[in-house]
Length: 151
Image (cartoon, rainbow, N blue to C red; front, side, top):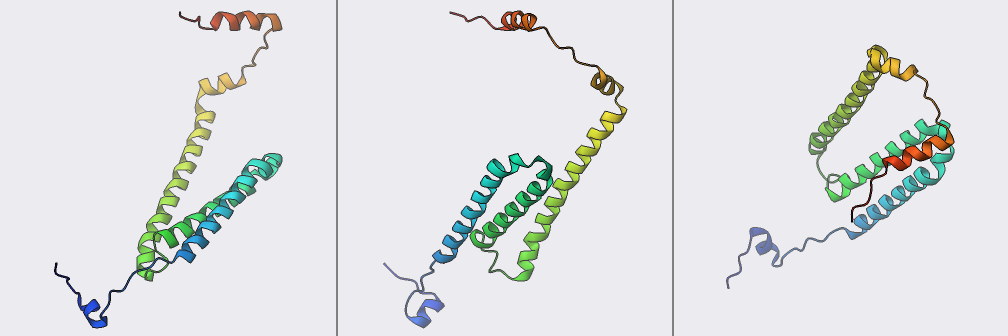
């Protein structure tokens, strides 16, 4: 079998092996793991006890998620080592995508608020008081709605 040599390998007389930067990959893995654990601890154990600080926890969660996205893009997509123009080619559309999501959420919230103000049926139904059922009455109603088993 013939071995083809490129000008690069012919110059040096040996093939250059590309090695992965395993230290950077492991560093990124540990950073992502720590951020994810912090998110889980805050979301599951700390935030439920502080309902008045919900907005602050949501902002903190968004910051942690953005940090994870940065490390994933920088290391695993090798964007950290690219030239500035290439980074901007990817970063600007990503920021536009985030802006689109924010705009759609804003528009949906606006629609919800306008519907609540201008839809008569919705407004009338929201002011009708709900009657409480008697304790004995509810038991019979639940039993009658249960599906019977088919043998």
